[in-house]
Structures are given as C-alpha cells and as structure tokens.
Image (spheres, one colour):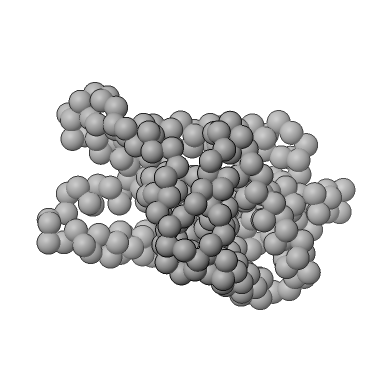
Length: 304
C-alpha cells in the first residue's frame, strides 16, 4: 500500500509538470499551427530571472528574494511578456509562412535566447535556493511526499480547471476555440487574430514560468539547458495527445509521467538507466497504432 501511494504521488506530480508544459505548446499549436521549440528557453529564462546576472559560479538571488506573493505573479508576468514579445518580434511576421519555416524560426529564437543567457550568466550550472522548505516530506497514506509534489498536483488541477473555464465562459476563450477549429473562418466572422494569438502566447509563457518555478524549487539548479529535456517530453506528450487537442495534451502529459515513474520503479536495476529508451519505444508503438494521437481534436474530425 505504501509503495502504491508513493508511486501515485510521484507519478501525479511528474505528470502534472509535463501536462503544464505540454499545455503551453498545445495552446500555440491550436491557434497558429506552430510547434514553438523556443518554449524550453522561456522556462530557462524565467529560472535565470530569479538570480543576478553574473558569470560567477555562485548565484546571488535577485527576484528570488521577493516574498512568494510578489514573486509568483511577477515571474508569471515575465514569462507571458517574453512569449508575447517573441510573437510580436518573430512569429507575427511569419503568419503566412509555411509551418516548417515557423518551426525553424522557433529553433532560431530558442538559440538566440539560450546564447543571451550564456552571455549574461555563463555556461556553468548555478546552485540556487528557492523555497527549500517545500521539499520537506509529509506523510500521507504511509507515503513520504514532499510538500512541493502536493503543490504541483493541486496547481495542475487549478490550471487545467481555470483554463477550461476561460475557454468555455469568456469571449477570448470562445475566440481561441473558434481559431483552433478553423482560423480562416474565425477571422471572417470577426475574431481578432492579434488578440487571440497574443492571448495564447501570454498563457503559454505564463505556463512556462510556472514550470520554471517548480523546476527551480525541485532541482535547486539554474542551467541554460534545463528547458530542453522537458520541452522534448512536452512535445512528445502534445503529439501523443493529438496535435491541437488541449485535453489530449494534458492527459498525455499525465500518461507520460505515470509511465516514466512506473518504469523507474519496476524495471530491473540494470535496466533503469535505459528507462527513457523503454518510454520512447512505448510512445512509438502508440503512434504506430494511432498516428493521429490518442485524442483527436475536433478540428481533425471529418465534417458533413
């Protein structure tokens, strides 16, 4: 029972982290047909915003010294700001371009952000201390669960619920859903493209900032490469869930997290270093059996 409870909390927290990252990617794909590979650099940017720019090995906290009630909204706003700025400076000029060209532009944008961070902070990972008390374990159902894991689970549920209400109950949400369904027709019916796309980028950047805060607290490290791995997993979850499907991205993010934790727990010790190989093999098998993803978005279904 203890092992099952521990697996549940580990899988739910890791899956929640992947789900939030995948949701940020799916939002942009839904309105622009763009896989934004700079999303991982948004995460790294928000982490480094917590410390003073310096190439020294020791990090000095900057925004990270602010109280949580100030720090969280400021970092979320910063994530939304860099995402909106990248849309205005880069992607707005490529809306009529081929999706492959926009994807390559996202790679180039990520490269620019990463090298700007390297120039300002250096290439060495820096140890940071952000809310270390959140790693204190709490006993639940016989499992020792860090408080941060519970916060990640609750935050993910709140984010998903809040986004669902936003999409269903507000005008901007209705416009986003219409744009995801058929962007050209939505524009003909009066949907303001700039407003919808800017809103999607702002939400995506805020989700990247939330992931950044969780990763910084969890790992205690600021590294320019830290967004790359989670971006890869989030992209896989987005494809697995069905490109353009927001519920699919969330569900697939949780699924990837659950499978990853289960493999880590149940694989033989000698095979655990190759956990990712087993995980991606299962993903390949799923996509071979269902190339359109596990959850087909409404825009992909045939209409009469």
